[in-house]
Image (cartoon, rainbow, N blue to C red; front, side):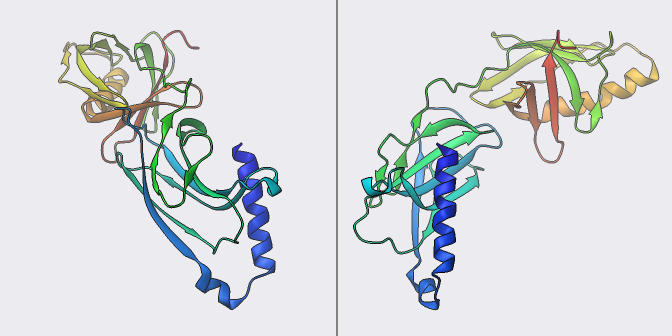
Length: 246
């Protein structure tokens, strides 16, 4: 569906360039609106809102896109948007459609049939079968920022349990404690750690993990279903793979 939509928009844009004239600049319109959903869940980092105007008139066959805006989401609902579009030819049946996607997967979308242009406040519905799997389980820490850890017997790892407890190792010392989870928001409470001395390479590995975990504020899954923990500020991400992964 997305591929067809963009192809139609490309044809329309090409046609408008061929037929352009100075008066067209004065025919542009601007629509301001908001998109929201009722579910109480935070969106993962990288979520994108797409809003487009479609002419669903039967003479076109497939719906023809007149304008589209795509923008990464950096706030909670309602999500504001601004859509600029050319003057619409008379006789068409124009509706607004929108969707929220994460890595190409649709999480929310407007109902079939779209919404009239006169109602730019868009209520999106959750798309069935798109729930993002929770971060529970046993994980091996693959990397923190640009630092990569080999899959050895001393590899660091974390286990997140459904009761909110977490335990694991930074490769040198063991750690244990609790975390809070709400949608895509995740925070580790202050963790207890053992204090044994290890070899210099393992001690060097321990430091960046200990600095990163208190900064975690959200989680997501990448295209390989690895768990990605996102830190606040410029600390980067921690990537974890299933404990039994090679």
